[in-house]
Amino acid sequence: MGYSPYYTAGIWGGCDNNQKLKDEHGSRNGGTSFAKRIWRKIMTRVHDGMSDPGFPMPDGIETAQVCRKSGKLAVPGVCSSDPRGNAVYTEYFAKGTAPTEACDHHVRVTVCAVSGGRPTAFCPPDQQEARTFMALPADEGVTDDSYYAMPDYCTVHNGSSTIIDPSQTDGSDIPFGPGYIPETTAPYSKPYEYYSYPRSSGDGNTIPIVPAGPNG
Image (tube, rainbow, N blue to C red):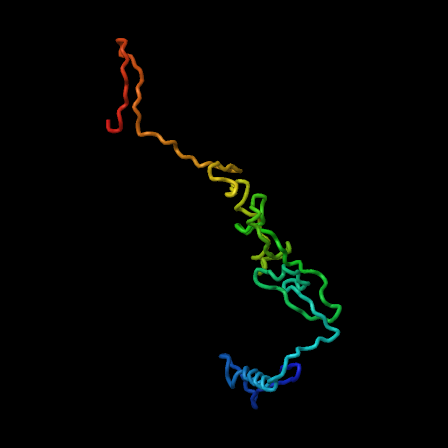
């Protein structure tokens, strides 16, 4: 059975001896989809050349944008940005029965774009963005919403991080910050050096002592 603003049509199909139209393999005696095909062909033919005026809404009906997860009024820009897809749809209500409370299942939170966690005082402002998460009741067990729950705080930017703004340095200065550990390079030293220690020979003469080179 189906209808349009112009016509209503119904198709019945069956067998004289009440045989099944569909078996365990999905088809026998034509299956059950042939009625749909017949209905579509008939309605397409009789509506040829007609405009689609739509269905006028009765005076006692109203619409509302509803969140699929909460069943409450959708919050613009929040429920529609559910990480699994748009959770907003249009629902029809008898006047006076539409929900009045806003969705409390979706929350919009600023997070660190690097870690995905809530930002700390060390997260650069230009690396933060807003994302939508699910607000889970404290007594709720694991559900399909649990994977999209509000995250913990960022673990990338913290008190042991050093943030260097390259636009504020010419590369010649040494950056310092919380937890900064400078890179150390062993000072250059020659393989050996010739030097002498004054030493007395016992007869009052000074004998120069020269260490041997690496080849003796």
